[in-house]
Each structure stands twice: as structure tokens, then as C-alpha cells.
Image (cartoon, rainbow, N blue to C red):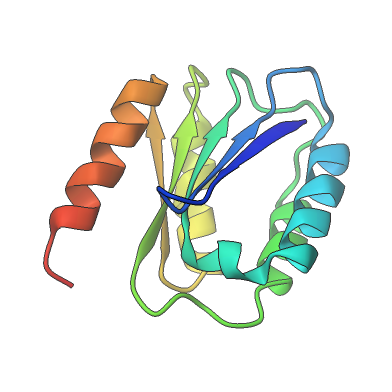
Length: 123
């Protein structure tokens, strides 16, 4: 899994398009969060053209369980994918992460635009 931390934009970008398994991606994400717990309060962009073959609800629960302190305000996880069923996963994840909304979009540009609009809304 590749990732970028954009300090200026306060944005974590995870790229799962390298064929990484969900279990490996989870382990790497947990390691990043352990070092940088402040990333929980940032917006995220997760690129996954298709959902990893081994993805499970248990893995999502493990990631949610690592959240020590929820963000003060609602943040977004933008899931960039062509997977037609990913919106179902996104809805389940909305219930597992306090003040984090999961939205499926088709492009990085659309993800950035939605984050920009969300940040402009009064909180």
C-alpha cells in the first residue's frame, strides 16, 4: 500500500491499487495511525478500484477499534472506486466510526471537490 500525508491540506491519501490484501493494508494503516493518531481527525482519500478480495467487516471493526478519540467535527473518508457494491460497505462503516462519513466517488478530483465543499460548510 502506498500512502501520502499532506500536512498542509490535513489529508491522508491511501492507495490500495497495488494489489495489496485488505489484511496487509489494515496492518499498515494501523501502524500509521499508531505513530500519527492526529490523522483520525483528518479527511481521508482511499483509492481502491476494486475491493480487496479478503476484505471483511471484522477488519473494519479492528480499524474502528483503534480510534481512541473521535474527531471534534465530522470528517470524510472518500472511497475512490468503480466497485458497484462499495456503497454498502461505506454505509456500514458510517456506523462504526463516530463523526466519520464514508462516501464512494469515481475519481480523485471528485473526492477532493467533495472534501473542499464539506470543509466550507458551517460546523
